[in-house]
Amino acid sequence: MLDADFALFNVDQLVTVAPGCHPAARGDLGVIERGALAARDGTIVWVGPMEEFDRNVALAADALVVNTHGRTVLPGFVDPHTHLIFAGDRSGDFYARALGARYAEQLGSGGLMQTVDATRAASDDELLDLAYLRAETFLRYGTTTIEAKTGYGLTEADELRGLRVLTRLQHLSPLKIIPAFLGAHVVPAEFHGDARAYIEAVVSWLPAVRDHARFVDAWFDEGAFDVEDGRRVLSAARELGFELTAHANELGPHGGARAAAELQARSVDHVVYLDDADIEALRRNGTVAVLLPGTTFFLNHDTYAPARRLLDAGVRVALGTDFNPGTSYTQNMQFILTLAVLKLGMTPEEAIRAATVDAAAAVDLEDRVGSLAPGKSCNLAVFRLNHYRHIPYHYAMNTVETVVAGGQLVVDNGQIITQPLVTA
Ligand code: NIG
Ligand code: FE
Image 1 (cartoon, protein in one colour):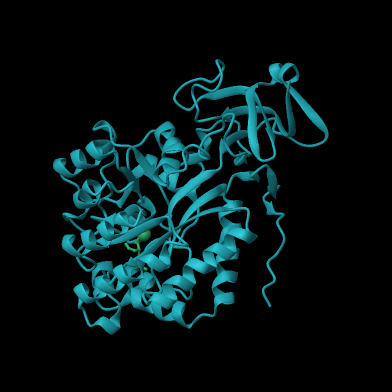
Image 2 (spheres, rainbow, N blue to C red):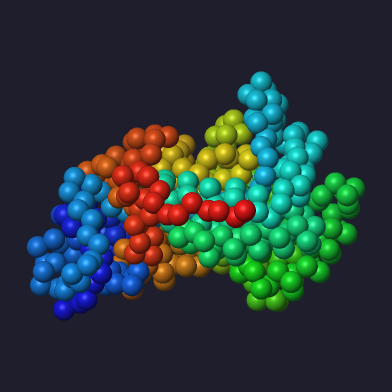
């Protein structure tokens, strides 16, 4: 018998995304009908059909039991690409685009620097407050793990401050956070377009970043960094033992996606414009393609990432929100699933894998999160729906009712039940 202090009973569909976890788990998503789950100290110890529960699990007298009759349960979403640390807003850019302005022009004329200025001007506690409220929103929408980037500081002090805020947040919030350093986001105004000089500055900050982040990111695109500069920062990071990720080929064809894959980046993100050789480079290097259809949608662009070509070539595809004030102001992975089905041509099953287990692979946490199987963290979202296919079908809505992170109830009946943050 397995001891447990947490259980889910009577789940209409327990979507484990772990097809081998139990003989009753069906299909690519490993769905157990009328399922149950047990956990102890925040780690799943058993999953299976409800009728097998009593034979396998000894539940503590004070265990937390969630009855999920009529509900669908998924692993908590893993959002592998967010720009969590920023202040201010860019609503002006948004409304200008609605009237026909293009993001590439806004980038050229300093749109992103507005966020850099607002972020630099905010105090540490303001940044922490903003990030904490955003962490609560992620949880309410069923996301229990995020990758969180810096990239709106762009000085050594401001970038390290962003990373320290992420460390403080991780101690306060049940949302699991993987920090990523995006010093190589764009060239800040004070470098007057001297990308080479700025990249050397970013490289010199890497030893100090080491204590706070596992991932280093760089943006390869027209208007951001060229292949040589991006490669310089990523190879220096690799030598220091960082994991690599990149923004690449978001605004047009570019050598960046291939260069990052060849440096064995764990993921290359956006990748809207890819030729066959780029796709082959991702496949050959085992690089995950993180697709961000919310960004294409919010920028009012027509061209979405080639998800089908990537999947058919055998590249692992993940989905994220790209949550940021300039190009994708959403934290809702459920809406991203809808866009994946409608705009990327993914099946609901592919989209759910991409938002859970494959997103976990993109942040190198597949052994802990993104699926519901013994040994994994007890992170899950309960949807008020009786079939997982109804998740992308409800669009831009929040159908999450209950969220459990690390075995703790953090959202109940749609309401956050963690403690409010008091920083003053
Ligand atoms: O992922 N592509 C680069 N960075 C962000 C947007 C930055 C901004 O405009 O604030 C993105 O789209
Ligand atoms: Fe991004």
